[in-house]
Image (cartoon, rainbow, N blue to C red; front, side, top):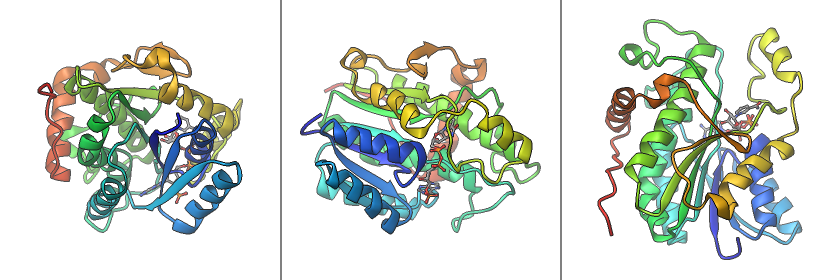
Length: 279
Ligand SMILES: NC(=O)c1ccc[n+]([C@@H]2O[C@H](COP(=O)([O-])OP(=O)(O)OC[C@H]3O[C@@H](n4cnc5c(N)ncnc54)[C@H](OP(=O)(O)O)[C@@H]3O)[C@@H](O)[C@H]2O)c1
C-alpha cells in the first residue's frame, strides 16, 4: 500500500479507527475524516507511533457545506485517492434535523457519502485502479420515497435500516455508473462487533447486538480485505458479508428504485455522479 492514499470516514472510533490503523500498518497514508479533531489527533498519534502516516480531516458529514470544505481540502493536499471508505454512520433514537434542515441519519449515513464521492470522483479516477468501499449491513428495510425525511412517520430503527438500504443501492448504482472507469465500488458487512453506534437504541436491541459481537479490530479485517486484496482489483458492484459475496434484498437491486434514490440524492446534495463516459 506504500504510496497510496486511503480516506476513512468516522475514523475516530469503532470500525473506522481500527480500519485506519490497520491500513496505515500496511503502508497507506490514511486521511482520517473525523467530527472531532482532537479525537482524530489521538488516532493519528497511534498511527505515527507505529511508524505509519496519517492526516486528520475535520468534517461533519451531515452538513453539505462541511463536506464541500473537506473535499476541497483533500483535493488541495492529495491529487489522487486510491481508496475511499464510507464507514461513518449515526443512529438517533428520535427524529432530529441538521442545521441544513435534513433528517440527521439520512444526511449522515447516505447523503454525506453521496456528496463526498461526487466531489472526490476526479481524485479517484486519477488513482485508478481505485476503490470505493461502503460499510453497511444486509438491510431489508424498504425506503419510503414519499416521506424520505420521515416527516409523516418516523421509527428510528426502520429509518436507520433505510439508510443502510440506501448504502446498498448507492453502491450498486455507483458501480454501474463507474463501470469501465477503473474505479470499483463494493459494499461490506463487517459482521456484528462491539461499538457505541447503537448506545441509544432500545435495551433489547443493545442486548441482541452484544451477543456474539466481535471486536472492531477483527471486523476491520474485512474492510482491509475489500480495500487491498489484489484478487478484488476488478470486482465491483458486490456485497461482501465478511469475506464472501452475498445477495441482498430485492429492493437494493431494483434499478428503478436505485434511480429514484439517485435523483433524490442529486436534488438534496446539489451534486451529480454521471455515468463514466470513457477515457
Ligand atoms: N457495530 C456493528 O455491529 C455494525 C454492524 C454492521 C455494520 N456496522 C457499520 O459500521 C460502521 C461503523 O460503525 P461503528 O459500529 O464502528 O460505530 P461508531 O464507533 O459509532 O462509529 C461511527 C463513526 O461515525 C462518525 N460519525 C457520526 N456522525 C458523523 C458525522 N456527522 N460526520 C462525521 N462522522 C460522523 C462517528 O464520529 P464520533 O466519534 O464523533 O461520534 C464515529 O467515528 C457504520 O457504517 C455501521 O453501520 C456496524
